[in-house]
Image (cartoon, rainbow, N blue to C red; front, side):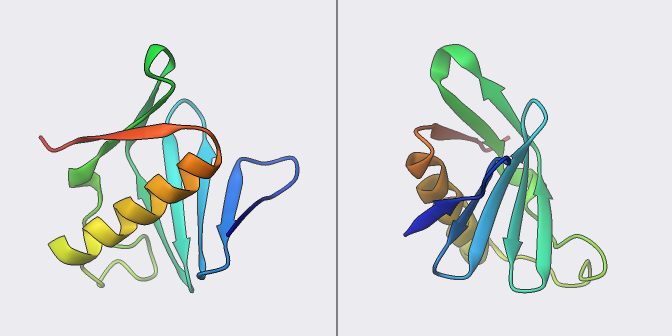
Length: 96
């Protein structure tokens, strides 16, 4: 289950993560005490967001030493997908 935080584009899950949309396409994914800033772009005619998969490599400081492997990268993308579906948006993945 997701809850939208008032006056912000933050979607919190009861599973312990949240997804924050900011600017024209930035995403901050929060999990426990870790945050990752993910490169993305809002596409108006698509009614969704394109996520740059290559930007999901490691957590932001102070946890930058924690590398995110391919398997966990897909977990993060799926969590973001579910949060954005709750917000009425879809996502596409840029694998390049």
